[in-house]
Length: 500
View 1 (cartoon, rainbow, N blue to C red):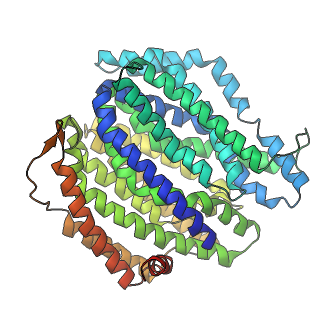
View 2: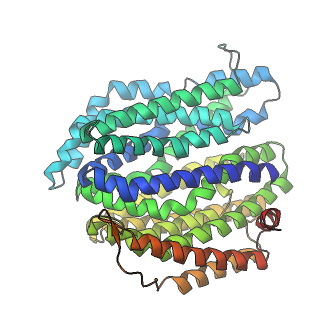
View 3: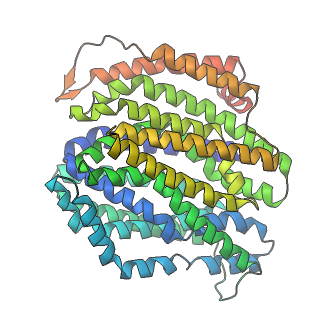
């Protein structure tokens, strides 16, 4: 786990700095500098682009990680990269040609809502397509860098660059350098620039000799790519279908309220994203080398470390969420407290499973990913429809649908790895860690410091003081307990290294 920890620590710091900037954007700038309907519009455009991005990417970003380490010569590696780099265009070009049909469908869908302000989407559907292509090729070149065991720069672009760009653009709106209407245009340009930067970096790390030769196992590569493109598209539905469904019923403002709650609930997954960026190629390498012992070691260590770190942020987020919502200017955002709990619970369960997904995706049994993801996509769609449209449960119903889907299908993936690979991520420390998280959550969830109300330039300061004081106590108690009980060898070594 040495190389994992070295890059994961860097990536975690980058991701949490990105989340900090993203938190400022989400809780302060978006909600004050853009009207709720324009914030909802941005959420809709980005979520819709996320839905079609895996389709355009053609699964190439996963294919590079799975197959690259399996080639033993540079010549074969070059053939492989040459053969996959242009595959996304097979989807992107026809989709662009028929985009006018997609545009009309989007307009018809959002027009179902009674909100007349939904018609602002009419001038912005093309940016869904532009951002999707940019993100697709960004992921391709990011995977190109990851197989060279260099994930930090790509992580900076993925986690920091976007949020800094958004912050700059939001201030540009505030100071009237650009209009609210121009915000998405400049944001799209920022995504294009990010992709170009990632491409240049990837080529500097590894520049293949370009040719029209195909690798010896191209049929296997293409077969895997087709499976992953379908599985990836289904996976994207799980993450973003709810944000796309909301405007069709309640308007873009409600999409903005839900996006804030989901952002807060998703905060805990940052270490999973950081560690996953280096775990994926390492897991692929250990599986390609038939090193079952190393694969199981990665499985167990990733699970306990992610549960430990994710558990801390689960407690911090859910014990401070009511104060976080007091920072927002519109009281309608405060209805998302239950959404935060449900989404963060789903994220914590995924972290508990460690690199489970990477093991399946990079094994010979990767085909199971397609029926699993299709099942999840169908499940979350029908549960969303049932809870949100039929039972009128509001956005809490969307979050509940996500949690139920995650629990059921990822429990199956847990069982699948146990049956096929004879390994689980759990140890005795896992169950102890779950108990610690529950006790900490229940112990700190029902009280706050009695801080008098205090405002600076009409901005509420007292919730920040309350959050800070409470968080310090939670972190100290939590870390003391997990270190004292030696939950994670890696965490204890890290603590001993910096605290003599």
